[in-house]
Image (cartoon, rainbow, N blue to C red; front, side, top):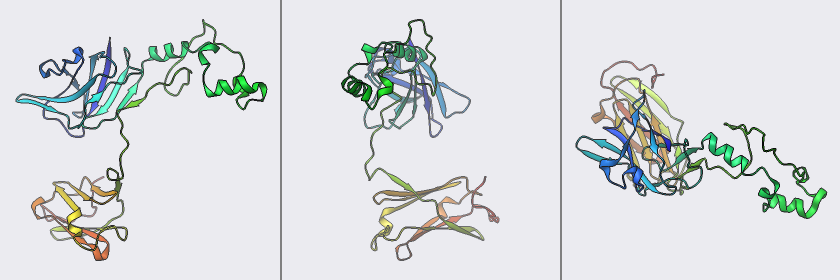
Length: 282
C-alpha cells in the first residue's frame, strides 16, 4: 500500500527532493534509505509514491545532493495525519512550509459513507439529540425521518459531493500565526524613469514608520530583476516587485526612508541605459 506525495519548491533545488522519517518505510531517519521523488515537467514540482507509513509518525523533506543532504528549514518535524491516511490518498505540500493538504482516496470516501448508512450510527450528535427530544417540533425536523441507505445503493464520491459520514481531514500541519508573523502586502506605489535609474515611491500609512531610527526596521533586497521591501513592524509590511523591465545593477541600488513624508524611495540602478516605458514585464 502507498500514498502519493506531491511537493512544490519555491525555487529550483540543488539536488533531488526526497522524504525521510521515523517509520521503517521512510528509513527510520537514516538518510541513506530516504525515499526519492521524481521531478516533473517543471523543476519546481516533485512527485512520487511512498510506502504507506503509520499515522502520526514524524517525517521531513530533504534535498539529496552529491556532497550531502539538506533538511527542509522547519523548526519541528512534519507529522502524517491520523485520519484519511490510507492506500491511494494524496498529500500535497510546499518545501519549507508546514501545511499539508490531504486528498482522501475514493475507497476511503466510500467506506466512510457506508459506515454511516444506518440510523444507529448517527446517534450521539447534537442534531439527533434535538430531534429525539422534540420530535416533529424539532428545528431539524427534516432530519428525523427514519431513512436508511439501502445496502445495494451505489455510493458516488468525488470533489464537491457530500456523501455523509465522519469528517474527512483535508489539511494538516497548519499553525495559527501571531500578529508578528502576519505580513500586510503593500500594493500602492508610483515610479519615474530617468537616465540610468528608476525611482519607485512607496507611500505608507501615517505612523507606520517611527520618527527615530526608521531605517533600522526597513530592509530592501535587490536582485537582477526583482526588488523585495520589508518593514519590520507589527504586523510586518512588505512589497515585492517582480519581473522588472530590465536588469539591475544590484550593487548601485539604494533605499531611502523618509519617515517625515511617510514614504520609502527605492532607487533602481539600470545595468543598461535604456528607457523603461513600463516598470515590469507582462
